[in-house]
Length: 262
Ligand code: ADP
Ligand code: MG
Image 1 (cartoon, rainbow, N blue to C red):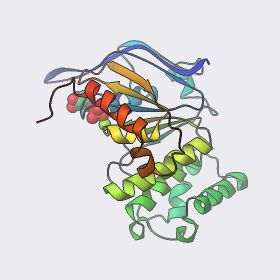
Image 2: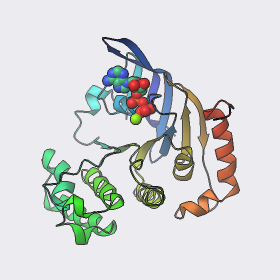
Image 3: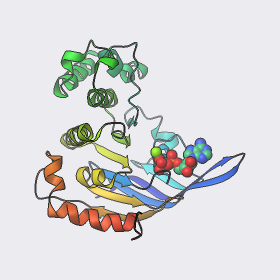
């Protein structure tokens, strides 16, 4: 299948008064329509930099980004090819209700129509937040807030989802449930998504393919397609399969260069 996103030989360095910090070096990555790709790598290796480049927020020093055949300056202007960006912090505004928060993207994009607000109400219902639409963010749990942030992202019908460690702020139990939940929503809607995580277990549990980055400056060390015979609905069941253990052991070896962690 033709990839819809193609990163070709991307390199990027930050420059400031202290000098140069090379973040990415010769990155090649292709993503197909409807694919859910996880990018895992050590903290500070350049994962967020990579997403910022895909989102068109940073311009690579070298290499080319093509999304549906367009370069960032063109696809960022396109009114249909919207990119949804979800971050570790939910960035919900306390002075707005949950409903007012989740329609914020629609307001900013001048997309507040009956059809779109009906869609938002349906998402609130589907994600178990309908009863909280008049509540303030502080009245919700961390997992509920993260779901609200996802609804705000989905409300504008993004064509591509970029998720930058969206579950890291949650405690372990909530994280398992919310990440499985959100992955299942992404799968059902057949969205193309890139999930950044420093958690290899999360990557292997959720994604169709895991890309492992090296330490900074990041290059692609390994790519592995992930498949399970069982459904992914129950993250604990997935994590107790033989396939999961095998994927984990192989990718852990790659991530740590076979060196002991202590
Ligand atoms: P990750 O998301 O994998 O933790 P980042 O992409 O945020 O890593 O950052 C990669 C490297 O670039 C880090 O070492 C970080 O300190 C450095 N970096 C990030 N942003 C800047 C910046 N604005 N100026 C200088 N260095 C930066
Ligand atoms: Mg980051």
